[in-house]
Image 1: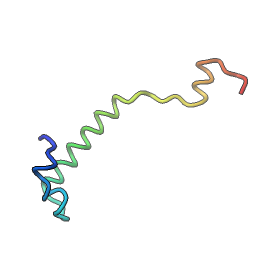
Image 2: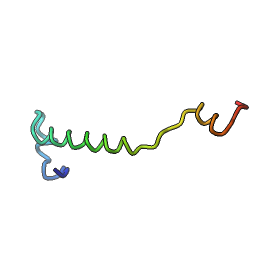
Image 3: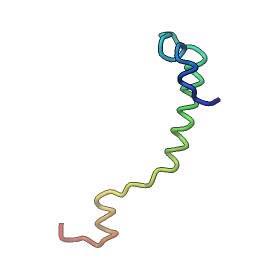
Length: 58
């Protein structure tokens, strides 16, 4: 399913109740978020950077 917000405008934005379109969009967006999380770079902590660059002065 592709995420077409304009063609599903009423079901997504005007209808306040949970419906199948909202559930499908939510599921698809959660899947995309999980895929993107696996491709995020690993952030190094301050201590990791100190060890990597051998910074002992601070």
